[in-house]
Length: 360
Length: 171
Ligand SMILES: [Zn+2]
Image 1 (cartoon, protein in one colour):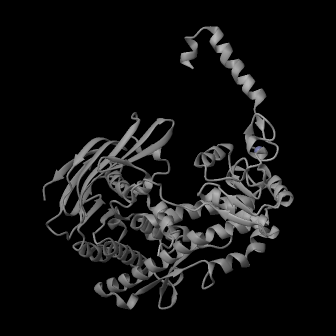
Image 2 (cartoon, rainbow over the protein chains, first blue to last red; image 1 turned 90 degrees about the horizontal axis):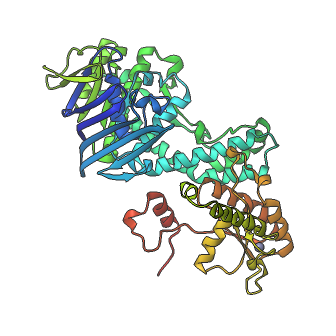
Image 3 (cartoon, each protein chain N blue to C red; image 1 turned 180 degrees about the vertical axis):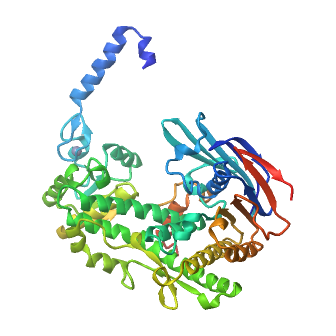
């Protein structure tokens, strides 16, 4: 897909902005705190309906204003797409509304109309960081790719929330109620596990090809799905842990504790790989995510790279930029124009919430 | 409220009296916990109603919804909500004990659980079916479906997926 126009009003430090990005690579150059990452955040919101970095959504509304808006016009395989997301903080709490081609829709029907793959410096911790980080990676990709996945994920989270509250409660947990929650978890839990297993198998296959392309087959990392229940069926695993959960007063098994495993020659990458090998693994994972999403949707997602090049050494940065040629449209932020770029890029200088076109 | 400010004092007094009278007259049925003027309520007293069929609902307003269908001829039991530990609501906060006692006493042929098709309504239904199962009484759940007169195009994916799961054989 191709984003042809982006409009912001009262979003972060932008009073108003109307920009027409180019196909291929778009680069936003500027010093810190000028608003270049805010642009990527806005574009990501058009796909996911959520900020990839705000802790409170009220932060998204420019200081002094009550309503922020992000709008985008895109061309997709099926035709044209007009998206709008508005964030209203006038009522004290923050309220978001969405519309697609001029018609108001709920969050679930907005999510995934546009698709993005984001790559931010925090992603570099994917291999060595907590399992929650890796689950978020999988969930964010699959929720965009499939409304059913998002629905199962939201339902599963709600049930787990009640189950955890039951176990934590002041009175001794009701065993029958715990078993009822276990029954209820089965259908969405199995769907999530099935979708994750299929997705990660596709990611693994794509990332193997990427290592070949980078002539780095010798340091090829294998990524596999590590379900919390191992090879045991979810129903059996839940049943086997009822007494344990009642005793420890917490939920112990289920896909909310799943993980991704990265291995280098059969050993855990986080413990045995160098920092450089871990970073290469993340780059390969992100490119693989992009390719799997493109293959599944029959339409390329938009790639958003927030200040990641500065975190990479020259060789990896060059390898990654070379791979960028294959992308339909990408947005990248940097403090200065990276060396070794194709001449066909569109550059923008970002200063204090304003954009000017860079003559290349 | 603003409308009331512009009216004579007597109007406001009349409204207040009406609310108090309503409060005095209306009570919960001691059998099914529906809102009623007479205890037991009309439905519990109606001899034409099938006493062996019991429908469990979360709120009294759900009874009116089911009654409007004119498709149900059994009796009701109002739980007073659904189980939601995150909001501090467990079985003890609802009329679950009363339901189990009533089933033991009345020995119905079937209990229909008509809670909402969301996380809490579903958990409540699964929990009740676990409690009722030892009595040997049949427990059923409302089916999910498409709105009648609706358009497949406009049904949300969740409803459509559930309707597919619950499809029935025509030939
Ligand atoms: Zn009654």
